[in-house]
Image (cartoon, rainbow, N blue to C red; front, side, top):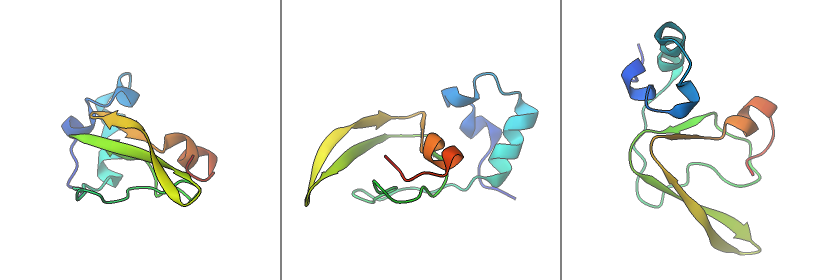
Length: 93
């Protein structure tokens, strides 16, 4: 049994038109992870680990510029990240 409930995923706009029965299938396969400050959830150019659903908080996004990391924006919960790379089997942008 998953530690993610339909109610956890419902606020994510990706699921706006998805009925609860179908959303339950997503919830069953999802795992909850609380990220530590500074933890990398994905890396530019690497394969995705799957969809990331940011359910609470804020995620700072950076991009590689040579050997430096440059700020590239912020993701605010609730949102989703990595769907295109996951579905297209391409590296994270």
